[in-house]
Length: 406
Image 1 (cartoon, one colour):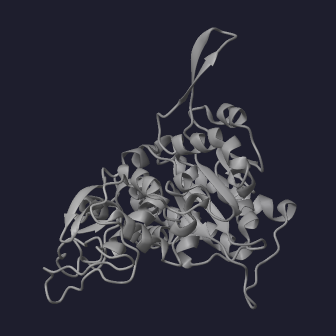
Image 2 (tube, rainbow, N blue to C red):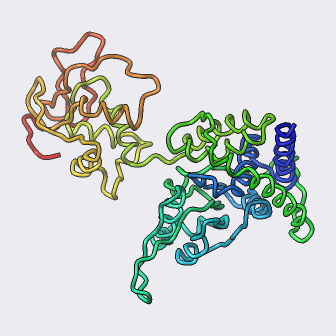
Image 3 (cartoon, rainbow, N blue to C red):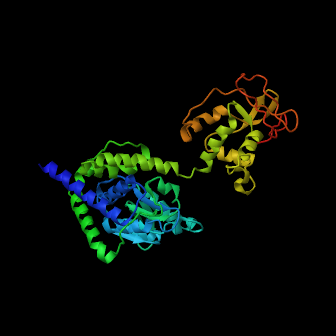
């Protein structure tokens, strides 16, 4: 009988929060609504969690509802501390407790964008470290002549235009807002009028959640995700499992959907983009001269390599980027001579780990691509399988027997 009462209570409170969100804000999908509901509920159970997921509310333009959504989050989350700017020291002092407030940063793009990004590296480091429990910052207290540990663990939500730092989004539930279309209506929000209703929801959430902290601390929900994404979503799914009803299924669907959406809109790092483009440049060949690889990379009109670093990708820059994956150039003997180049086998492990091909390898690679013995053309490979074309596409070759460094 007690179990039945708990399930009904939990679902009813989450449903009320769901109704409040959709009354004042148009979110991009049902999964996004469920995610925000569960994130707000999870903020009331911070003492139970090993991880404190971030909530990123981003939009491509103004007037997409991100600040209004943050208003509703502020009205319903646990002990909100909202700001449009903050020094790292102030944030440290605010959250260095066993039961920290929920940090809400509006206009976060002005903190982490443009020239301000470097100046706010400490704040970004705090938000990254605070995703996991027991990652304090250490400071020396000159006045007391002793070392001081300051906690960083706290729930945090950020709202702004454009993508947040990738290290933050990698630890976040990301909500990609969009401007309301014709016919999409919301009720106007006024804090004096509507705030008390939201506060009642917050009080009920807190009473329900705080009564089940030991169960939430022991919870090990079955996760549809892995690694850091699982760490981020575990508190939300634990709350959904506690509530019961259809929330457990909805939470897992939201986790899979929003994680896939986030990954699909994540800006790829230069190194991973380079790995992917190198795979395309190799085609089916076992090896390729450095000069030919550079030419192929720089002739892709949608790639950044022609203007990379202001002067274009050079052999030295290429080598520096690839060295992080233990990929280095060397002297390769092609059918028409020797030249500096890269072996396909050296890329295989990095391709599999960082940019796996969803279609897999279509066929086996051919013999190494040769340097040309005549200016302006690549000599054809003479021992290719009939189905595999020679590297003969009019790109400038390196000189035969070149031994310059990559």
